Length: 272
Image 1 (cartoon, rainbow, N blue to C red):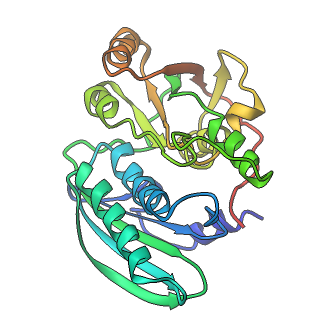
Image 2 (cartoon, rainbow, N blue to C red; image 1 turned 90 degrees about the vertical axis):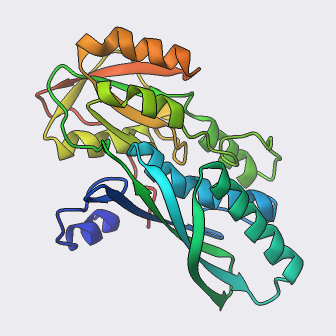
């Protein structure tokens, strides 16, 4: 049993199902970023850890074509952490929030055994990009180059070093591409659980399947925590989407067409 899906199914709200909950023109989203679940302290500096914690939360707002406004940050701090380390964490959180014009307005702290982050982002949108609305014949595409995050995670598990520019450490958010392409996009979401699993989520929400235009390797399709974008668009907007991708320097791979079938990828859930 997929326990994450089971838990979500028990929340009876019409707002559940996207990267964030759209209420009027506000988007509310929250993600956890926990030590020994999402990262290990010896893999990254405290500044890098805090930066990624904020970026993966901002990703939900960006994915929905929303402008981040405010953040609420809850921190679980190990008892042996010192004030200089706390300063490094807080300064990094503020720095990345400021890059996206987002203000940290509160939160909570508790003493714990690990360094854990839980962040809520409140953002605003006039035209939310959601997972609902796929139509037969739409193209499915993803941004960027997938596979690096899983590759580098495996290297870390093997005790190797990875580049500080690795997407496992420094996710790339496609803000400019989404803003410019939004009116031509049918659906969208960020790729956090891997292309295979996240494509399945979008297809099942719309009771659709797909026809592959190119084979996707397991290395590409099963790499989680990429935070690239999975998008769909009607064929008549193909040239416009390609034009915007070039204009914003966004690699874009069109890998499938939406079909009225039950073709889904095989995927393993990353949670529990």
